[in-house]
Length: 165
Image 1 (cartoon, rainbow, N blue to C red):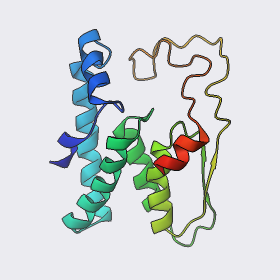
Image 2: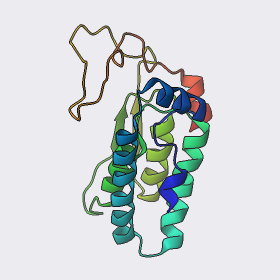
Image 3: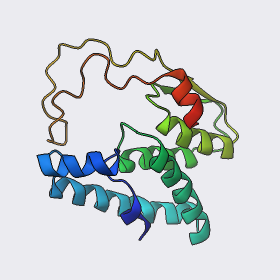
Image 4: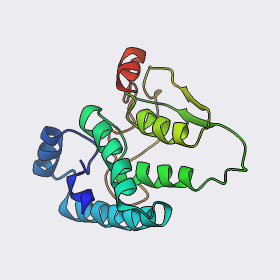
């Protein structure tokens, strides 16, 4: 299955290896991510009856993954992208992204938006996250998100985004 080739943690191979060594991306989390990717791949089969077309889209997304550091995991962005494909053509409107980091999700969303012939707008301060004093120790899924929401985190530059999209 194609999902095995995806960078499941949304970071480089070196960062992923270090994360496993430090226990930040445990075996159970990895298995849950792979399970979710398999479920979404089955959903793709309903949208794209041709395996060739499914694989073409997955390869486009993987190409972005291999070149651009992202803050999302692959199942989350794939779920969002599949929801975009499910939008009824009669539904008017554009697609907007608030916060682009280095442009990884922007690149993927722009591919789908162009295919759907929808305008796509991206908004970012390029300053990263603002100062936040709220306690964020665990996600709603129970894994640690300690130090994820620090001031300046996820700051990319306009030049990085332009180069990556």
